[in-house]
Image 1 (spheres, rainbow, N blue to C red):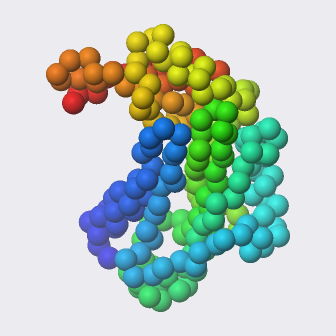
Image 2 (cartoon, rainbow, N blue to C red):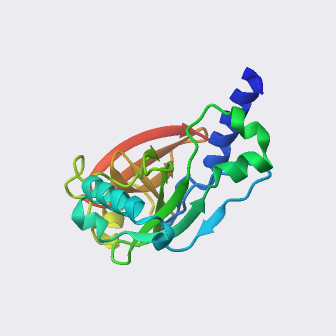
Amino acid sequence: MNHFSNIFFLLWIVLIGAVGSAAAQNGVKKCRTTKYSLIYSPELIESITVLPDSIQQTLNNHLKETLGDGFYQKLQFDGGKLINYRQLVKQDPQVASYKWVAPKYDLRYFISDSLAGISYCCSRIILDSVGGIINDIEFPSFSKNKSNAKFLPQNKLLNIARQLGFPTTNYELAIAKDHIVFIFSVKKNSKSMLYMEISVHTGEVIRKYKSAI
């Protein structure tokens, strides 16, 4: 595979991986998905117990250390993919030329909190064959957000948005700057929208920004 083919593949992985990563409407944020080959289909993981004990221990220790005990207790395993690199290369030989760290475990976790209006908020963590982290989980880290396991009531968050002049019929759920956030929007004029992200942990405005319509 030549240099340009490698670049094309990496761009393709990024684009495919972005599917489902955008914020979703009213209390739901789905996980992104990655298609590692147009030919090979990884084995699906339905239970975390299929991972080797050493991998499970390394993974759980990392999640506890990164997220803190409070947030870790809220995590629910949501399945994943088991990538067999030998089988992948056998079915799709060009993969052997890719300049990447081959993943082994592509895992999804989610949290929900009915009081906060969070039905499903998903994030992935991708590991190599020995449990090394390729892509870390994006949930708020405890070291950067000590309130990451605290969730304010949904009606309080919506009231904050209304007081700041934003409609609350429709909003989005996302993860930004180590906060789970509600994203509210209002049309400013015929050419632009104003967006505001409010932390579900603290109720503070994380950021505001404009976007062209």
